[in-house]
Length: 333
Image (cartoon, rainbow, N blue to C red):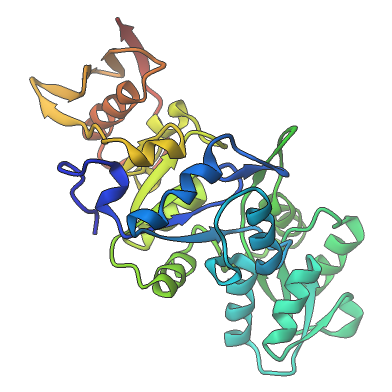
């Protein structure tokens, strides 16, 4: 259910919790995104709970929470829900306690597997009944080869997440999905996916917080927004990470966010929700209409309101899009 934000003095006042992604929302690489920690600090005084939902399976939730606190963001260990936890939970439901599992990933993922009564191994020679694959910057060819040998021999295969890329301080780098694709290409098999864009990760986080009206905030359409939509929650794309105003406009239906925020600072200002008017859409001083394969926008490309109305107009004209649809943009000052 998506709350009505029309009468809210600030966007966040319509919600009782924020389920926030990390990479591209709170930080990029080791550094905080400017203004993000301060924006998150402002939630508790307004009575809004905060949880972090991350596909990062390379670090423990305690390590993630400690890093967040170092950056100035509020975070207790239990506020972080990771795809490593979700993957280990899924694994424990699929195989008997005491089973050998080939862990292709970090020590944090090994810990989560052990915590569920399973036996981590590192080689296909150990006859694992399952493979769980998560991201680690230390993974190499030999690790992927061992996973491939086990999967090809019939082992159950679980991926903590399938993010193709991750934002780093130096730019966009390959993510776990790219490594999963290597095993997929070599075996012809498909993994079960535990983290985003599946709904359970978000549902678990909302349940922990006791949230009835959460908003999922993320920078990726194919994980954060798709997963939040699947969970039935309000979704807000923030423009500080991977996806851009152009990719959001072109998004397929399942990956379209309900809201668009320039930065987390937009949590604390009124949201100009697009409204249908005069054969088009309007928000604040921006207007947009669709003419064939074009979107004509009265406003500035630097104004997020202009992109909000452009998306509203284009999506209204293409309500059921199974693929990306890229319009021509015509800007009028």
